[in-house]
Image (cartoon, rainbow, N blue to C red; front, side, top):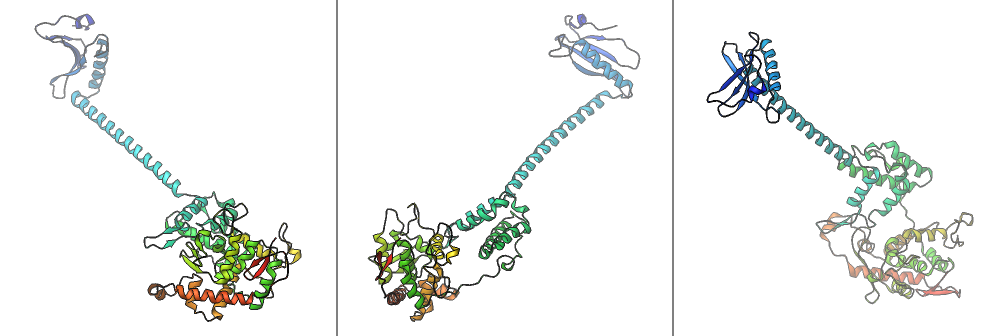
Length: 475
């Protein structure tokens, strides 16, 4: 019937289907149009299948504007495509197209699945990278985690306290000065033994052997902490010993003799120490306390009426109460006369905190030097506190106090309690819970009486203040 036109496609419906078929060569199939009695206008491609049967394959509905269906031209082009496919040897077009649609759907589903898998993997990779970055912490970050977890004071479920009294500030000061400048921003996992040995060798070369050993211990603890938490793959210092750092620690055994104590008491007025520092020397001797505990003492913990000094927070995380003998009570009374605003018995120069124990130690060390070794800006009384037995420290006073107690017949277990030592014997620690307060009080009184005997002679200087039966010079 020739070529189907738009005019034909827009003809009015009839009582029966109106079919229109375009001419074509034999074996190429036919482009067919249909108008139903209901007014539907549809396109088809008619062809013979592999069995010779005639098949009409729907192409779509007619829409002259091409908005909701096919234009006549579009339908004819689609029929031409199918004709070429049919001529190429594909006889069962419907099955072929259904399979193509199925394949397309499968490809689409595969593409969606692959895209979802790619998105999942990308998310996992991003999360893994984020986790890796979080795990790949720097040396400074590792220190911060170690300090917060292990060094900060904590109370365990059994009521015992762990951590360090200073919360790790001493360790942080070491790291800020010697580790962080070169290694602080390096990933902890990338640190090699050579990096840390350089830090230790630098301290050793400067003659700071004890500092080298302290750094070794702290670095090993920190990297062991990181190894346990898989923040580093190994503790690179595990095989390093003190011999490789500052050498074996030499345990001090300096004890001041009776003659040296007498000389010390006589020397204090001429040592140009401030009043509080002068009183701190006999107080350490009379209480056998640690210098850091004395420097951090607060008036709220001292009861002059009850004659007690309570230490709620000590180096070994165990509270301790010191009985005040007549000797030590008088020292605190003199300190009370010097009391200023603020809670501290030994306030620093700003009045905003206690004196640093290292500052007190430096005051003692500055007065045990040769004149030519005097440090700039430090005391001119460089030999004022030199004693016959050689250099001494504030901790030697604590050791001297314990030795004096032993010479007075005080038993070792009571001396341990007076010193607030943790008992080494597990049996004693487990089964003997009595802190022996009465025996401690007797020991402190005996110690105070012995120190008072040594403290008999009085200086003749006029610019002095009273100090436990004697007077001590002021600045």
